[in-house]
Length: 199
Image 1: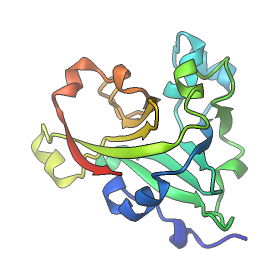
Image 2: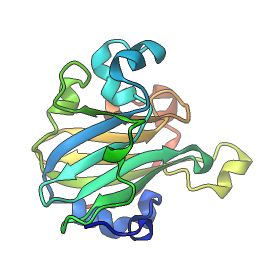
Image 3: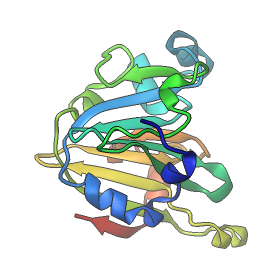
């Protein structure tokens, strides 16, 4: 069954607290990154070395599948300097229109693919989500004060393992990245504050 887009509208993390609260306690069933280019082309075009980092640094959104059947989408929106998220599929199997999986201009990369995804990403599969943190970047420019600047959504798992869905935190860019906290640019660490913790 499908429902109109309005049911699954995207928004910044702080506007989706109810959804995030439902995510906590779920097991991560799948992680699928959607690349704007085929993997073989992407690693060359974007100079990604080693190639197992493609999952982290490809241009394109990610879908996080949970054990209850829900699927969460995350990307970033440079116009508001923020990560954005949406419900791609709910627990009852109702889906967002159009589905990312149906977009022929995107190329799916699974976290199970050892060629394109690092062990740090693959090892999160099957883990239970313990908490989620929202990080906000300090408005360094006057015009930034008009934007939410919610640049990080960090998923923390029981027993260890963290996934940071980031708006440019790896290189101070407008690019969406799927990284671990250790991959945040050292220049940006002091420019971030914890906006909210969902447990």
